[in-house]
Length: 328
Image 1 (cartoon, one colour):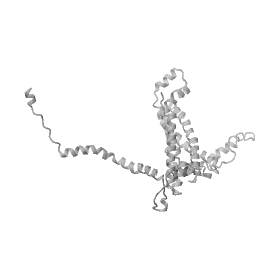
Image 2 (spheres, helix red, strand yellow):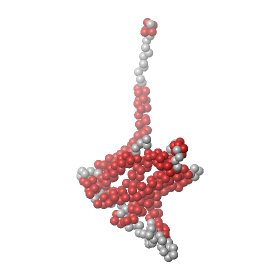
Image 3 (cartoon, one colour):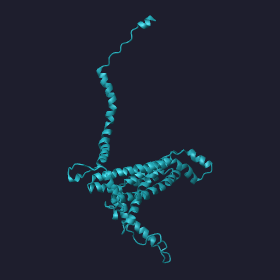
Image 4 (cartoon, helix red, strand yellow):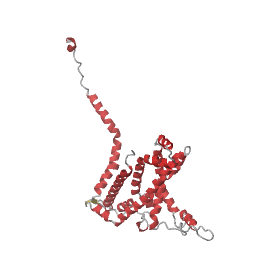
């Protein structure tokens, strides 16, 4: 016992200074390598975001020179809410969002289900065909559809008037459904419909791909159990597919809300940057752009951007309440 206690405890050598800096370097190195992301995000993401919030409480016209900002408090927000053109742009945005967004998902879900259950060998080809509009240039799409909807030589008018003038025994049997004369799609009552159709055509394939990816994760056992219970194909779709698609529906609808409330390229190009006759095609994003870069009122434009953010946040919260719940 005495021999054990009498043994000397090994003395720990003091850490060398080089080892100290080596350990410090090992701890700092990971942050050094990921620092470019945070620097880029701070400069090009966080700073413009915070600056726009700061700017929304000021009056500033950079076009007048290096003028100092003038604090105005909530006046920019009050002016935006009271502005008739902003109210109309919000109305136009809402109408276009509903007319293009609802048909997107109403068609994308059954279309994805049909592709999932009917195609095996050519599935990727079919998906690629539907996905092409999403990756095509927005400018090209808008210009093509502007030509297609032309009043004098557009293909849409040619097809519609051909159906409207279709005669049997000297009687135009379809004239009560289709027009017999060319439609001027630039008129205010048609502008939003034309823009909505272009947006619908471009994004329905994107939503189809989203729902198709979700369908591929549904266990096959659920369908087999439904078949054993006597469920037909419609009942399988209603009681198995739709409930299992709720998480993806929440995600897809959220993207649709964000995209439609920020809609800019399609209406801007189709209306020539003016919003069309009586501003029937001017969206909130277009109004914000015109306020900032045409009227040089960056304070009000920043306030509009934050109003849109609050609207998007509110609608996303409502969407979460409707579609974001548990499937159980």
